[in-house]
Image (cartoon, rainbow, N blue to C red; front, top):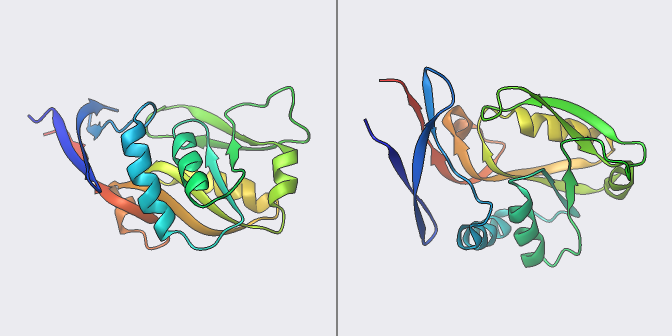
Length: 181
């Protein structure tokens, strides 16, 4: 049984550990938090593939460094982050719920009303590290659509499993799933 998966993004290669997410399924654990080299490489490649947009929108937490890098490369002074909970500073937040393959329980995605006002009527790109089931992306899209923004691109470093067959996302590499043998 293999314990790692070799992944190359542009000129950067990583050995990803395979982790069990259920009794029947392992995934290659791809964590960009703290990996400035992979973020810089992926950010550059994604920035080149994106259409013209007014804002980037991502979900807390692993999409943040990628959105930051892409915004910096595109000369965008700001990007929007949907948080995992309602914060005291938020005004009239928009809330969606989602279940992720890696968390196994329902989570919230929250868009601050002030951020919603910024993106209203604007063209946005949704940014994430990995698109797997697409549930997080759908929840994020529901929030920005409710806020009145137009989603013109959906981008991630990796498309995992069946998401690699989607034609509505921009991604750099496919990431296989590893069913129990």
